[in-house]
Amino acid sequence: MFDFLRKNRNRGHGNPRQVARERVQSAIRRDRIEVSSPQLTALRDSMLFTIREHLPAAPEFAEFGIQRDGDELFLISRVRLHQQGH
Image (cartoon, rainbow, N blue to C red; front, side, top):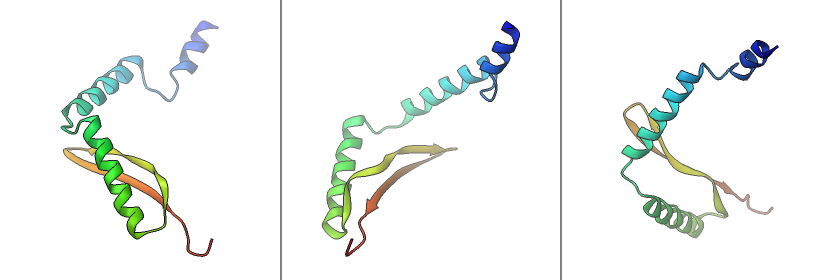
């Protein structure tokens, strides 16, 4: 019975060694990003202020952050726009 539980616990998540390796790699990637949390917060606030000056936008981003794809970094941001007349 315990074998059944162990197999189901790890199903779809890879083996524990692989999961640990992926977590360490993720932590290393985060450490290599040279944008501090306060800088990212200031950037988010500035971008949202500017967007809201020109477009009818929601008061907060639906998504905002930095993502790595291979050797490239991307600033990801999504803000909901309100439709005119709604």
